[in-house]
Length: 279
Image (cartoon, rainbow, N blue to C red):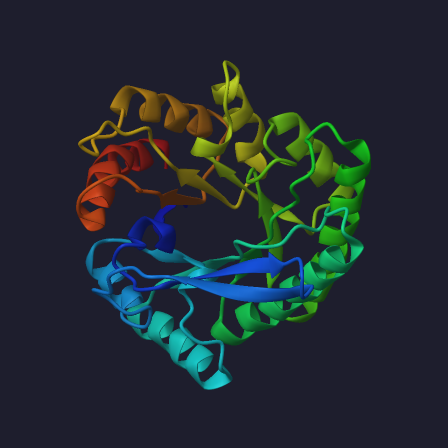
């Protein structure tokens, strides 16, 4: 049965500093850049708050983790359990397994494995891994990504973590490249379809092409300058997803102006009646 979830990106102005990973080309190491944001809520408090607002699951961006110490990860796991909220996906927002820089590619691969370990310790069911930043028409890069994702999926399975990817960044920016990648990687690798990451005249058909293979869809509307979503457009995307028989997590995304909870509430009002219809 389908259910409502939110990504912590939709609350990034509420959850405190972002700890953004980047590759230092001089030292050939990963570094962290801290981007300050207001903190109205801690990550440990979020599951209970989400439950109180009618959400059944969360997807957590890796840059929202204030600590990866095992004791903290156990606390986070417990906070989900106590709130009766699913920790669906840890969204790893860094890594290029198609990089032409071999040292970076190997370091990023090891970085991803480390975060699979973290996902396992904090109780995340899945980890979203970026498929790559190569061109979507680069067949060699698609094969490299598929092989790497398959290897990561095998490692993830040993930790009870499902490895998935998304139509996020260049390599999977089209449904065609995404479907090729998934076919090569095999069934152990899952997928997320993000409404905001396909572009062009065929966007709605692309959403329909990958939604049936997805563990979740990121419901990312177009907003006006007041943060009001384009309802007609969003319902067209949701209808297309419903036509495919998709019945999993609808993850609400808000990155517009004003209070982020209120922005999510506006999206939720559009999605909820649709969920009741398609169940």
